[in-house]
Image 1 (tube, rainbow, N blue to C red):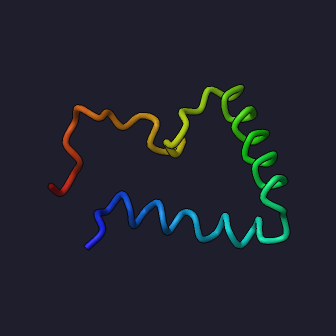
Image 2: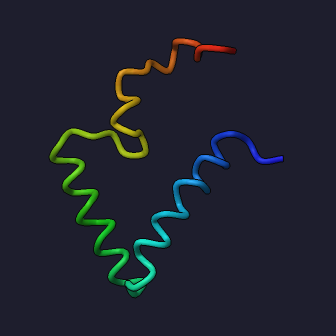
Image 3: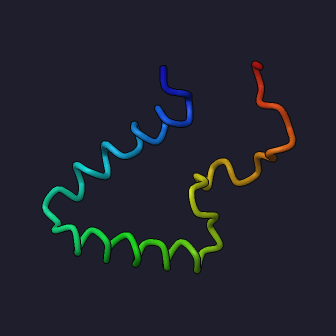
Amino acid sequence: MPGRKARTVRAGAAPEQQVCEGLSPDEHGQLAALLGRLAARQGLTPGVHPGFRSVRADRPARGR
């Protein structure tokens, strides 16, 4: 059975595929690069949802 992280990644990929289905692979890559630049300018950490920015990795998650 896949882990929680793998399930989360798959769940997050589905809407991206739907939104980008009209783009060629090159266009999809360009969009990802542009969005990455925008996120970097905003100080966002790649792969981390902004809502979880304040969650510390060394602190156990609630309910575990």
